[in-house]
Image (cartoon, rainbow, N blue to C red; front, side, top):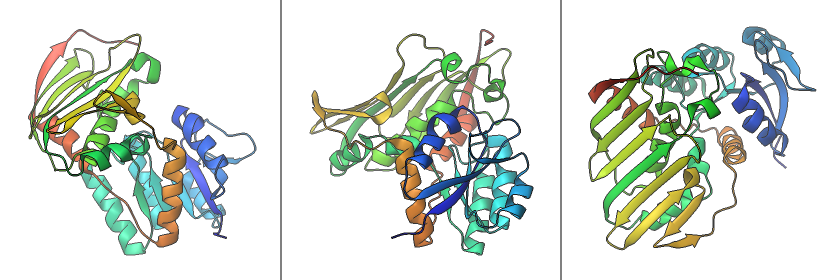
Length: 305
């Protein structure tokens, strides 16, 4: 039987409570051994407010899972790797590509696992969509990713600050799926980004890629939320609904894998640690960076929570 891994969870906010903690506690691979957060706690788990102290006092904890916002994450990841711990990064894996490359190189030099997670790739319809598309000629693909920032990030002003990524915070989930399922690479050719007059990051984006691929991201949608990817091929049309969790091919629903995103991520991390491997795919971040480089800026009405 494989050894149970002890993990410290850093950043006890909404995503940690809603997804990480239940996934860890439901898995036979893991023990949630400690948390690090300025304010948040998990009942029954030793809590720290300083990562350096946790690393010094708990040498038996071999894995650190980081759920912090992107901007402060690098310093915590570097400290954990320097202390000889394997590291799991919530998406996006960093605020910049250079940060993630530095962490990848550090992990490689120290023989440690670094896992840049993309939870939407673990949605129940994604693997089947990738298999179906693997031998198809794609003629067109379009992403519609529209949600309500007030619902998913209530009062979290950091998402509109530099490094917060704005609408790309959810939009990068779509980019992680499209880059996983398409049978060919794509590159960005143009973008229009809408910035509220009082904010530093975009609230909406329209992207154009090579090979007939496009995307529409918007953080102002109220009511039902829309997370769809439609791909047309010479042999039919495939649509992923609900963020990749429902797959429909030529109007027929395809049974999903039954997998849940965060349990699948932690299962993957356990395998990577035991196999002494890393998984650091930055392709979705490259498309985001290209959008910010090529994007034409349009100013729109101020936005407040």
